[in-house]
Length: 93
Image 1 (cartoon, rainbow, N blue to C red):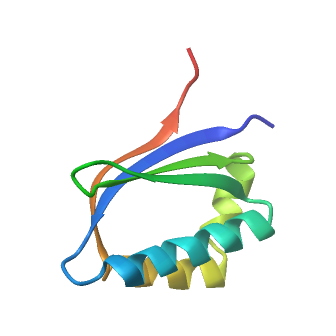
Image 2 (image 1 turned 30 degrees about the horizontal axis):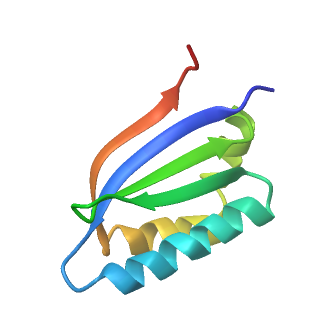
C-alpha cells in the first residue's frame, strides 16, 4: 500500500482564522489518531495556508471520507475557509 500525497492551499474567511485553525487541528488529530494520515500545516506571508497530507493509502483516504467525526470537521471548515487549490494525488518523480 503506497502513501498518497495531497496538498491543499486555503485562506481563512474574514473573522474565522482562529476557528478554522482549531477545526483543522481537530481534523488533523482525528486523522492521525485513526491512522488515516499524517499532516503538516504551513502559512505563507500572504496568510494563505498550505496543508500537506500523507494519506496512509487509498483505502485509508476512502475510510476517512466516511468517518463521521472527520466529516463534521470538513463541514465546519466549509464555513470557515476558502479553498484556493487542491492537489488530490501527487506522484513522486
